[in-house]
Length: 358
Image (cartoon, rainbow, N blue to C red; front, side, top):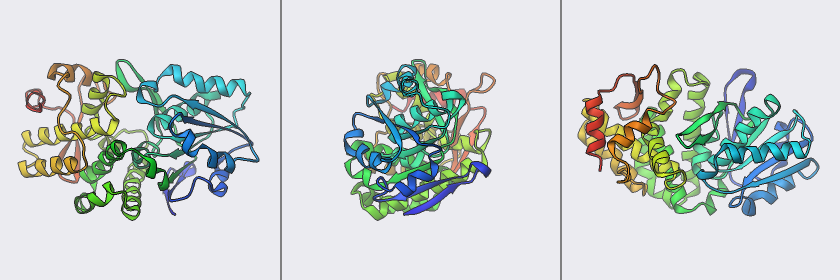
């Protein structure tokens, strides 16, 4: 097991990464505030991994909420199911929520914890690669709205993150690839040596080599922890973690939540960001091709869905958390391993990029 920390002063918390961690009470118990705990999971993950978590909580009063699986259920209505369970079981403000699942479960349980009785502790137990390297770390919690992804939420940090790499053994290939999109993102935005490592080791990651996966997860989490510690509420540097996300969120919203996996949409978004960066004179064509080649090797899509027109993209991107004073900000690349916040993007170049991406 490797342990990193997100350094947030008196809210500092650990990220435990390694195999066989689910059934370890000593890793869970220090972060449970009282003898009340609610485990939030879904219909896919619970049959696989709920029992060892319950065994670790055996001497505590704990209840379980099983939610439907899928991005389309990341809604206020589903969130209310968690609140109802907390109230029905008369859980107090010292209870602890435990998120057992992927990014949707982590976001829902985290947002519920942020809101219930104005804030109760929660723990992340991410079971997908994407959640282990990204969404479980940093305290972003949210639900979707039909008009925009993650538009209703809160910054709310967990007490700890327990990433059991054994859970990746049951992850479908498509979901593994989706998680690799977020791993590749760290190399593109701030860690060029990691990008080069990924280019050399991608086949080992796809083959689920345990050592390669652990190394990639740890390096990704280390990058994210450093950024979050420097800019918890995304007033500056943390926005760089959104490379490809404005384009990607437009895809997810436009085609309907759950049709594309988040990582798939982000992969296309990173291609579009790289191509736009080249049109602005920041990347060379061969660098754009490196980005495309690595994502293709990760078995990720490179082009947006044909059902979304450039006008659809622009309309959907206008409803984005990174819009400020009516102006869209995009995360682009000055170089491989060097992302920047582009405050005023040339509208003609943006449309040109969207029109030529199909």
